[in-house]
Length: 118
Image (spheres, one colour):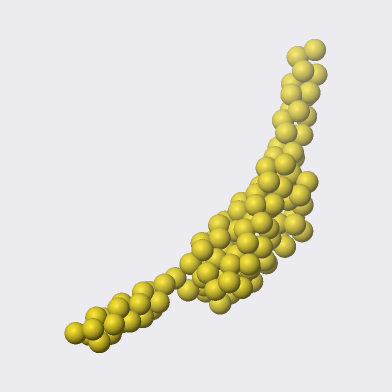
């Protein structure tokens, strides 16, 4: 009976390991690439983007530490969050020049309207 219980516990333990989240092989690389893209796009110069870029870096670093400790579940979640924050930083960095251009055009239109009225 005791052997049966020990066997059942071992099988349940193995089943738990089999269903544990695994870190996709490219997850760490993907997050690093997106972080690098955000840096190259100037995310550090855009306050909102800089904040998300910093979070992405911190999460990727923590995920590396967790992987070293074989805590794959938490590492996988942190890598997903790092990727999402890096993508948002990249999008915000790319949006900033477009927003600045739109504001410049709006001001030019306003200036032209004022000159036309006078």
